[in-house]
Image (cartoon, rainbow, N blue to C red):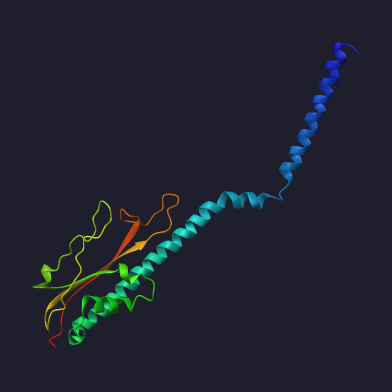
Length: 191
C-alpha cells in the first residue's frame, strides 16, 4: 500500500469519526431528557435567594410590629397609673413588655428606658448604639412619673439577621444585627 493509499484510508477514518461524532452530537442536541435538571440548576440559586430574602424581610417586619405593639400595650400601664400603683421596677416593666412578644425575642437582650420629660419638645432620643462596633451605649432607667407627667418610653432590640447572599443583608449595625425600636411619648392621666 502506498503512502497515498494510507492517507486516503486515514482520511476516510477521520470522516467516519466525524460523522459518528456529528450524529452523536445531533442526538445529544435533540435529547430533552435533562433540560429540566439543567434549568433548575441554573435558576435554583437566584430562586432560593429571593425566597430567603422575602422570608427574612417579612420576619423582621413582623418582629418590629410585635415589639411596637408590646411597647404600646405596656405604655398604657404607665399612662393609666397601673404601673405606679403596683410600684413597677425596670425589671417588672420589661417583663410587661415581654408578655406581649410571644416568645419571639430573648427578653434578656431587650433594652428599655422610661423617663419623665418636662415638655413634649424635650422628648429626644439619644444614640443607643456605638456606631463603630455595634455595642450598647444605652443606660437603662425607669421613671414612670406621676399623674399628668409627660413620659418617654423607649425599647430597643438587636434582631439577628441570617441571610447574607447575593449582596442582600438587612443588618444595619456593625455586629451584623438589625436594630428594632419602639418609642412612645404620652402624658399620664391625672390619677
